[in-house]
Length: 443
Image (tube, helix red, strand yellow):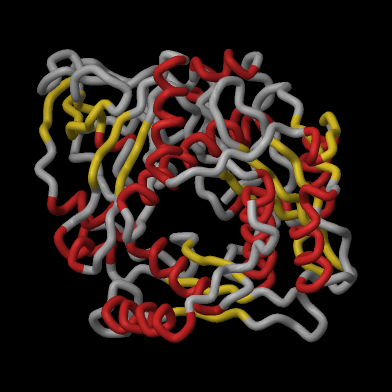
């Protein structure tokens, strides 16, 4: 773990490469994104560069309604403007690939009772109370109903299998008469110019959200991290670049029962100058301080974005059990917890924690991306988990020099819509059992 967490500066050649990519990707008329937004800090505020992007016209690819500004949740925070731009462009390419793949790929259509080949058929993820709720959007899996399928490669051994497209490809739209049993999210997808790094990032994101959902909806205790000499580089960055008028960032390790790496949540609270009552950023990696830094940047980005106004306004009060289904996007929950009277739910969840000094936590693991991928695959195999791989790299994305892998595991918890947690998912048993249906705070 290097002592300096700041992005490595590669001089003019790196900036030139990013500018060349931006010229191919960004255009108000023909670009994958119409523009890149830059958010300036207020005087005395946190000295971090935040960039955001929206996708241009992807709704035309799938016949859907146009998304509003900020709806795709594409953005990046960094101490370096060039780094923030390339991360936002890469995330834009990743999201676009989900929609473009849905157009390019020829899906197979068959009922679950007679799939097109070896298949993972939809599980029952929601309980009777959820289906009975007013406005609950999902339907029970019907073995006789025709679904769209695509083949994914089994990275953990065994034959390739067909999986439901609606659960794994964000841009897929169920055909008329196809029951919608579970939403797809982009978790487990990454875009990078190096295929090994892209695959590692995708796997780590999958593991991160499993630990995140496992912590939120069960009695699993997080570990509040006390900073010490192991995290001195991070503490120095916070002192130099983050707004000193608010409470210090608070970091929690979210433990996985059986998978490697660190998943960290960073709690940022409102400063004296205002802002959302609480924001929770997530970070992952095989080095603790790196995961903490990623979580800090994500939490900072959420605060900045919220203050700028892309999240829809909300006058929601604390939801009762039968009102949870109204939180069916990943904006309303963030708005909900921005209010002090609602933020106490997040505060109480993270207050139920253990405490450890950073130096007392497991050691970092540093290696090249392919070695780390192998380490994750070994952990999946040894714990009996399936990990599937699909390539979302369409010809136009490949022409840009990017690779977009998609990994998915039916044995890990997905990022749920806040009002529709997968209460019956078997993975919750590894976290001690499903307990709490409070809407989660993650975008």
